[in-house]
Length: 245
Image (cartoon, rainbow, N blue to C red; front, side, top):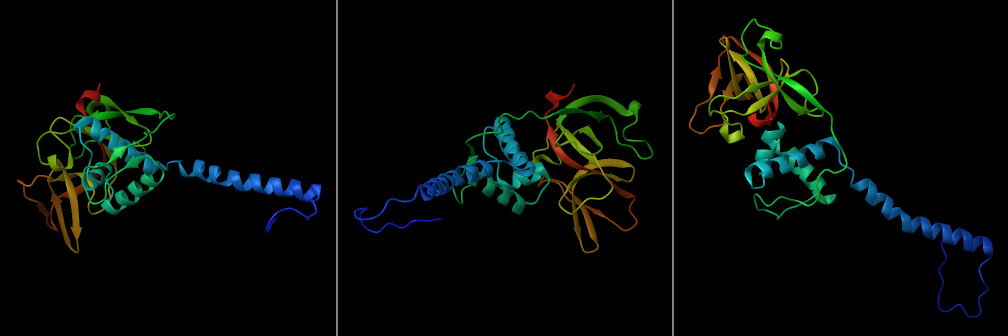
């Protein structure tokens, strides 16, 4: 119900009591509606929370804000998806950034009042053909990982070498791997090639498959039709070696 009053109230009859009550209720509901919408608009989805945590983690570790490409590599998603999540986070008031400028992400408020369950993921000493990855005798330790990240059957591997440094996967880091036999082009994977395990970015185009290092000094590895090649799992996170126990 709406009331439109033109001019003053002189000469007009007072509103009936029932109309006053309805008018007050309607006005109160209208005043409260934006507050309800605002409250709902600040709730983060799991994807938005993962991006926010990745930004915070990167800044804590490197002292600078990550680029969109770096966030995409950290989270194993495509850059357009990162752009969309950043837009949502900005709308909800969690981050600020300067348009068209790299490394200007600023976290205004982090993920608060929410504790995630941690799970211990086994660190595997070696990935070898014909040996069960999670065999007890193949486990050399454990590393705590957020349960929201480590869903599915996961294991950790210690990185040796510099082939993935441009993806912020450095010598001595531990990667968290979800065990799976299928991956998409652009995913960072653990693959078996001629009975040896390697960590590379998978590239698929038409009938061409390559394992690409994230190091400009190294060349892609072409996978021929007769190659002894298989996917072991997808890299879903990177942890510092100081978190292992």
